[in-house]
Length: 130
Image (tube, rainbow, N blue to C red; front, side, top):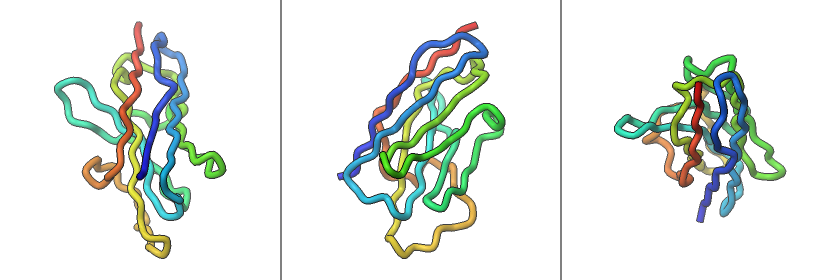
């Protein structure tokens, strides 16, 4: 049973930083997509940053240059370093994963479409105040 548990959310002022963590368990992560998504009340969930098991990454235009996604394979933990936070970054942030067979050939671009990710955490709130 794949489990994803997020932590690290909180309240910061504009320009501040936070690092989100997502502890993954229940599977041997060989071929995968993992990513961070966010959703505000009444809005659709959107991709923030994703990474695959080959290290390819994709970012939403709104966070490029400010956010960095990374994964510690030894700890099976996904991170999102968020710098220079803005009020519009206020959202509930989710960690997600899609697992592939070990011999699967990953596509060259990692999708940021939420419906292609089958496993989700419970979310962690990020609030940025001015």
